[in-house]
Image (cartoon, rainbow, N blue to C red; front, side, top):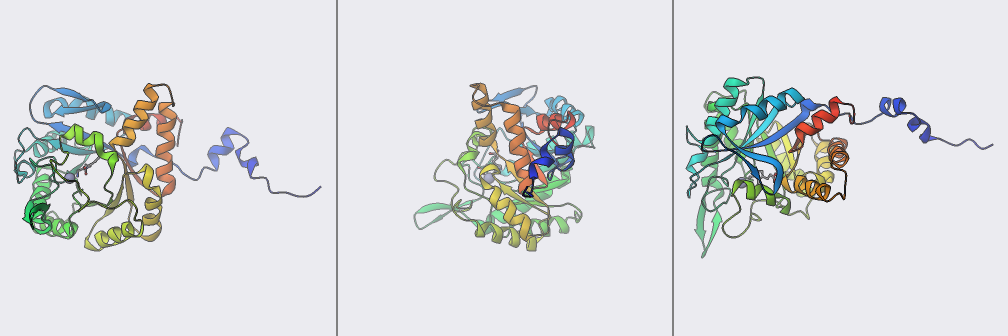
Length: 331
Ligand code: PBG
Ligand code: ZN
């Protein structure tokens, strides 16, 4: 009889399937995005993100404790201020929502690694990620004056106790500007995770509802990337690494796994990917209708991100994924 290769042999028993797995996941690589808001005593469910909430600072303890218990030890904080203005001043106020949330969480749960999003859009009245200027009869975001504000935001967050800053604004030169400001402030050891490769995406819809940060006019296409482009993604990543980024983030995740692989294969820094609000909302909606199995789709999405080359995975499902890892359903 003719000899044939039989790859199926390696899948023949559960023990062997596990033994030869190429991708393994660990809860320590998960980041949970969390929304904090001004006020007291409130936990509000976000309509477009069932199971996700806006917490006032005094109400964050329960969630932090259940995350830690499940093995999720990193969060990314997004602040939703009561007052927004033209220059987004609450983003860098000493008693701003993020600054108060970080210091509360780090004081009570020093073991939680707290990352802060550096951007203006949750704080500006017009919802854009930077300062506006008028140019030939229309408004646009002014790259270079925004850099000065981003420096202030990052420094104020780190002063409040942030362990790592994550600029998501997509202004050119921001990583170098933030690195310079942090170093000048004595924060030479604080890392920067850059959302280097952030596409102008409709998957951000539910987040913008959660944060009330949809642009009042126009869109973000002048600063976020065109999703037809892959090589440009690598160029953005390489520039940010040269400017001092410690981790490169690709965002969204599921429709951009080719970019994750491209960045992984062509750089030597850790690659993170963010499974954004629209990805979560789609899974929740389909599962609610009984059209898909929520848990197994969630696990499949997570593993695909790691398989593509991500070593860090940010997701609204972080706690549930950690439980699946612990109970041996993935891993
Ligand atoms: C702010 C920011 C956004 C997200 C993360 N940081 C929204 C945007 O760029 O409009 C989206 C995250 C998500 O959809 O879960 N710049
Ligand atoms: Zn923004």
